[in-house]
Image (cartoon, rainbow, N blue to C red):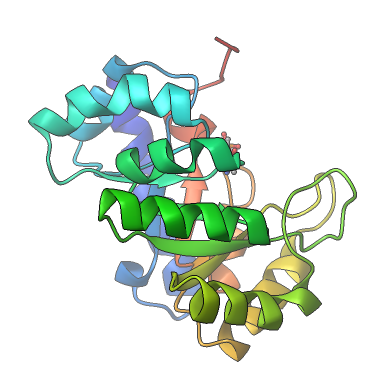
Length: 223
Ligand SMILES: *Cc1c(COP(=O)(O)O)cnc(C)c1O
């Protein structure tokens, strides 16, 4: 667990360096600590090291892990970064603070309904399938304008950002750059991109949130 604090220190330094290199203020880049597949003790170690922003990719897993931690640390901010089924929208709205993976009209409707029912208003990011990969979730960039209109005008959702996972085993830089242009075009202030292997490139291209798991918590073994 000691490692987690040390890993966070190293990571924060790398984030600072990457931001400086890009001529950006370090405060404009937030670290989302991705704790999926790691237990509450690992999250607790990160909390002790000052981390407050976390990402989880499954509703069920987050539901088991975070409510007790939140009781002790009310300032935790939890982002959903994995795919969300419409029948889990209500649970997700109760547990998370930001939904980063809004990717289709049915989910926009389900989230809107869940927010009205729970009287919670969560900002959402729209997931973009920036590499146009068949197996991946996310909207095509050219669908974004219409989808934004639908989310906001029909469903009253608050959309504040974009997120993506670029194609594996390719240079992510052009994908990140394209994401930055999309976010700027649509005046979306948040841009969630970059993971353990490529967060420095993402920061250079304008990421405001980098989602890092392995570099903080170590390798994951499936639960
Ligand atoms: C697991 C995951 C991450 C973190 O990946 P690492 O390579 O462990 O840093 C980031 N984003 C999403 C969407 C993930 O599912």
